[in-house]
Amino acid sequence: MGNTLQTSIQKLNVQYNTPEGIPVKSVLDEWVKSTMGFEQSKARLTIMDKRKKEFQEEYRKFAPLGAMLKKIERQISVAEQEYLELLHGLSLARLAQQSNELSSKLTIVDPPYLPLKPNPSKRILMLIVGVFAGFVIVLGVLLSKALLNKTLQQPAKALKKIGVPLLGIYPLLNTNKNFINKANLRIMQQLLSKIAFGKKPVVIAVVSNQKGEGKSTLINMWSNELTQMNYTVENLTWAVNTYFSPKPKTDLVFLELPALDSIILTKGRVPEVDHAIIVCRANRIWNRIDQELLDIFIKTANVSPLLILNGVGTDDAEDYIGEVPKERSLIRSFMKRLLRLEFGNRKLILKGLKSE
Image (cartoon, rainbow, N blue to C red):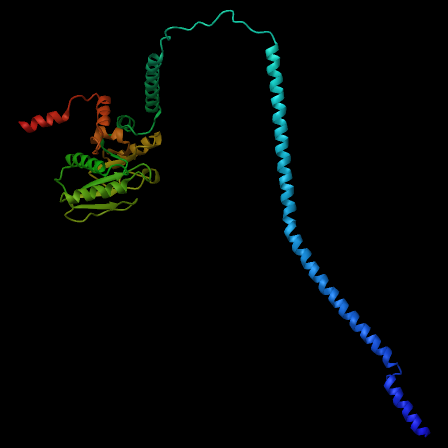
């Protein structure tokens, strides 16, 4: 009986207490309370997150409105200040107007005289004076340019300075091509008229005082021109203390010498030539050293050279080559004939010759 009672008590104890000896009822109450507290806290967190999102949406909506409101307030403040300044200026203007009205009134003692006819204008006189002054200024500039220019652009001055006969001139090579051909024709006319072809070959020395005077370019042009005229031409370059031997059956030999300011010439060492041509740039000054070099060449080579000016301006070249072959307007042709004092109508003369 005691065992049965003890067994019943143990069963009862297992039903109402946990293995640790804690009453089952109090454990269940605590679990229910804990579960309810957890669910309440979870619900609160969910509500707080939702409220936080709603607050952030409202903040995004109203944040730009504050900046716009500040901008509008500044614009209103500026407009208000401008209005107040204008109102103040208007008040000052009205006060000044009232002050002028209250001051003593001015009366006209001597009214102005209104002329019935205008005074004569000096426009024609000023126009005449301006045209005359412009003509004098332009003439003075041209005269001063011509007098102060010490280069060899003008062939007449170049002949006086250099003192050798002029064979011909060449304009700038970048000018009219037909004008270059015309200049080349004039050179060939003068050159062939001075050559006697009794002895062949005829050796022509081409020299210059400085480098870059244009010897090689001119020699090539002459060779091409003479070759087209059925002459046999040979171009040679001479060095100091050397000899040259032209090809047989050659009509003309152009012998190019180095620049005179870079070599020493002595009698007996200069090659024997029939004619000599000295090429000189027209845009440089002829100095004393240039004259001395030319005199040395004349003494050692025992030949009188002919002068060719290279790179002469178009206006100066026309006197020796002829008119530049190009089309001109009627006004330009008339002004050119007027400046040259060339009167008469060339077309009428040509028309009369054709009719005959």
